[in-house]
Image (cartoon, rainbow, N blue to C red):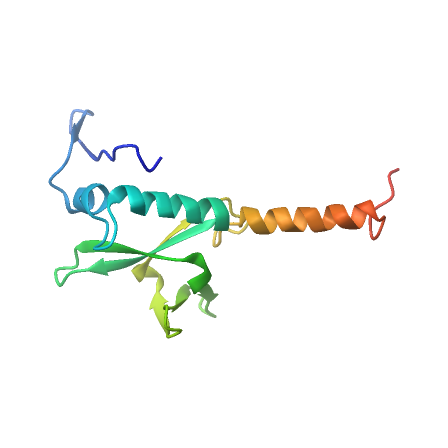
Length: 148
């Protein structure tokens, strides 16, 4: 997926569509997602995070006009979603130096893999570990239901 070209279309009034290359979204996703990565590296990293952790995150960096100019990836181990009493949520991000920041949901682009609650993607690694743990219990007939 990372090596596939990114194509952005604009819907025409007649139902057709036109390719767009002069839109800010095209510049960010197809040309330069952030100052450190090219689009291939960025998409490959996000795919890896989704495949291994079930979630991928980017900090949304905007200019003074509110236009998104960068999407800075955040490693899934460095971010936690926090549910608030109001029902809304925010993110607690720990940087490489251990400094925590609380960011509103509007400043994080969260891509979720398969989810059981719509909030967090499920980690395939964690699911595999829990299956193995259950298989281990069943292998030794500990806490396994008896077949009827």
